Image 1 (cartoon, one colour):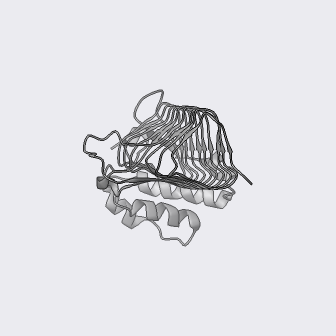
Image 2 (image 1 turned 120 degrees about the vertical axis):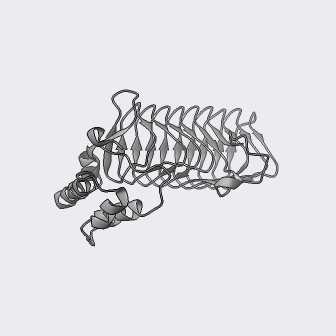
Image 3 (image 1 turned 90 degrees about the horizontal axis):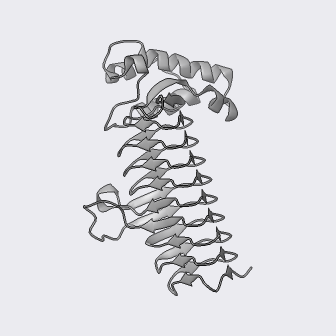
Length: 267
């Protein structure tokens, strides 16, 4: 099907626009942008930089995609933004290209919901089926794994990781890595702390009661003694289950900040 492009849209002749793409009033598309088929740009959308966008993505008014990073070390290097399929970018969100120091690419997977006012800084890696609620702010080099949910106004410090199937409550300040399957809160603007297992989230994603109980057992093993984190990891009871493998892989990935602890055991 032919594209539906409004007459007020400004599109570089060098941009690559696939079939059945709708580009609404006052949108601006730069020369190094590639948009796959069936995407929708409602109006006033600005997409620049070396940006590749997958199929069936939606961009709402005043979203700004692929701009230069807000990093004083950036001097115009050729870096990229890669966006997968079926992502939704709501009003006033901003997504930046990468930097040389961060591998050169900001990467967003598939089926993510990026709500209004969200900022995704340079070199972030967003997995699949992630929800970033209103006004979430990710500093550079943040990694968000699959099915994680960040509630409104969460701020994440650079180089932090958010594990799969975790839930971060509103107004949290995240300055350490969050284990998969975690429920994290912050008591209204304070530093994030572990508040238990994300039981509701796990149920919604089809995990069994046995698997939920196993996550609780693993958390108890990690947080119930005074050993170093490395010693805690080594003492974990080995398992071939899906939940153990997800948590174990996360723990064995080098961390720049340590992990998020319960409030009464925050280290």
